[in-house]
Image (cartoon, rainbow, N blue to C red; front, side, top):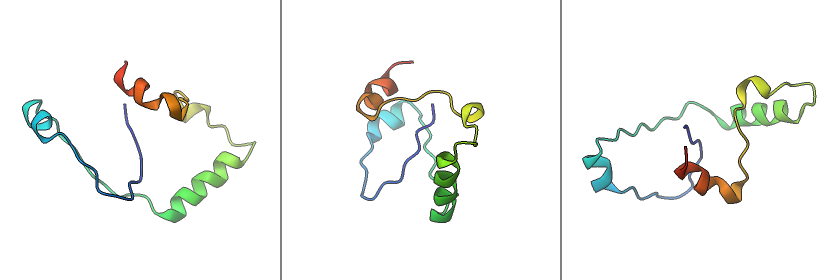
Length: 70
């Protein structure tokens, strides 16, 4: 699973769990505000077929539960 998001504040991570589980975390900035604006424009276009790149829609209220289940 990939979780994408833009964080406006500092985030805390469970350092001990990350270390013991040998989890690797990568941070990257590859998109600009202009890219997000273009994506939103495409999503608002009724002729744009999002089906090939969309696997599942999860309501925001159920997002956390969805992350914990396969």
